[in-house]
Image (cartoon, rainbow, N blue to C red; front, side, top):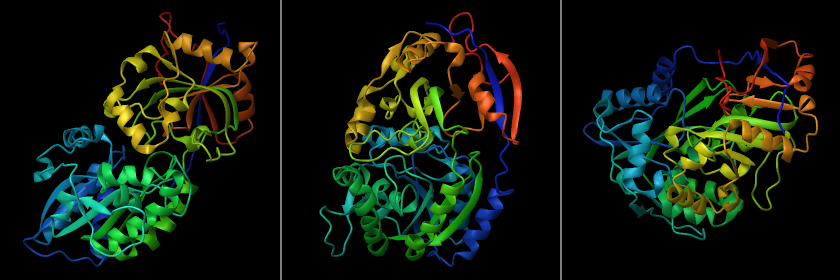
Length: 417
């Protein structure tokens, strides 16, 4: 089956709040957070494994703030089992985001070693934290606050999760994931609260991005206030999350997936699929078939989440590091997400397989859309039936009509231009 129906490039105009000067706002909130550091002391600054638009700017200002108080900063990966659950792998992930050893004069101290966190608790697991972070006089956690792709609750992705799972490395990540979504929704915040109360974390710097992947809020928070303040920041993130402009599709084509896009490669909140036993799917959108075409280089072969798609291309399949992917998937406990989908020979073949799988008899009537990735949902390629629905929107721009989806070699044409 092949399609003769053209696509149309459209843009949804979104008026999203954003910061004009990220560096200045970071400086302001750090100056007002009321946290003091001891001159001459070492301070660990944590960095996770997600692609965050202004992360280097924010961390650079945190480094400058630490030095202005006479303390010496260094960087620590806080990413659970990512990077293949090895010290070198996590160091490579940081380097891919621009944080190579020596960046801004900071050493990167990477290890999978953990130490116990003191204090009594009644949780069904030991509580640990990164050994390099624990060796500092103080630790500052830096992370984006956003919806999680596995579960929903008062705390999802953010400072609390980095404190419990990111700094807990593979040992604590596995311990919490062993309890399924209950471990994330219910136990993770309790672990984080214990670490905040008993370890050396003095502050967190939270980043909230808008639906256009732009920084809209930065807040430096004293450690004791993180559990309270993060609740409101997650509500803000939910209100400005990326989402598709339609609720029903036969086919969704996603150009790329990866760990820098989402913890599970493809944001489950965008595609309406969870693929966790006992965890309900989001009510919308409803998508018949999903194809994904490439794995981002920043993923380093980690294709966690590929099972959320129905079809992948041969070049995506060839880019998979199965050991790295298996480690991440097994640690999460959500093995369905690590299943290899049907592999298409090329992009055109992926489209044809999706049409067949969605039960589309007449391709010209297919409700289909194409996006670059699940972080960017305001610029799309859509077919006639989807365009007809979207034309009712006052915020729609039709950028180009009648675009062929594939070139003569069967590859997707460039998304823009």
